[in-house]
Picture 1: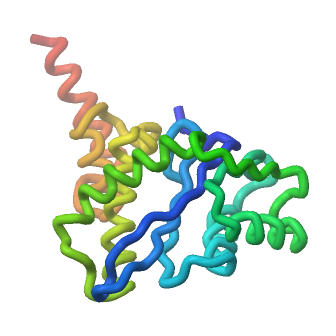
Picture 2 (picture 1 turned 180 degrees about the horizontal axis):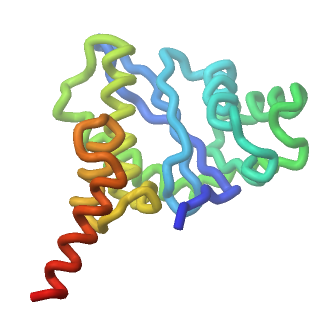
Picture 3 (picture 1 turned 180 degrees about the vertical axis):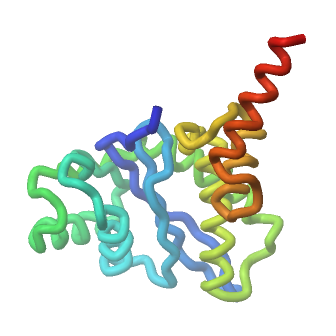
Length: 190
């Protein structure tokens, strides 16, 4: 079963070092902890928050738009949300809640991501940082089970096969299913 993101999103940013300077890593999770989107910016202001939120909602169907956006007390989010509503990119009924404890799951997820980033000792460029963080986010989403609908097997084997298919490293989906079925029927025959 494919997981659809909840319509209650948590938005926050954390700090990542790039070329010896702190940059801002914006992230969005739904209330169940599923990753929705991320954005790396050299600035922390309303313009960057707006770009991040616009990127996150781009291409969504009307029924997939968030009904509630939960943020910390940063004023940048309020400005960005209001501007997107005025431009018609965000429905006017979208509720903006500034309740700190609602972002606890996101703050916890930041910590898990930072444990992956720390051994890198910072990044040499924004491009490298973004590519690496994108890989980290994909692997974290797999670990959270966000791609389970596309896996033919459970567990780590299913994740490996999914990645192989995405990068054309393994068998095609049909060939893979045939191998699994043959193995299953051989076990039953024994």
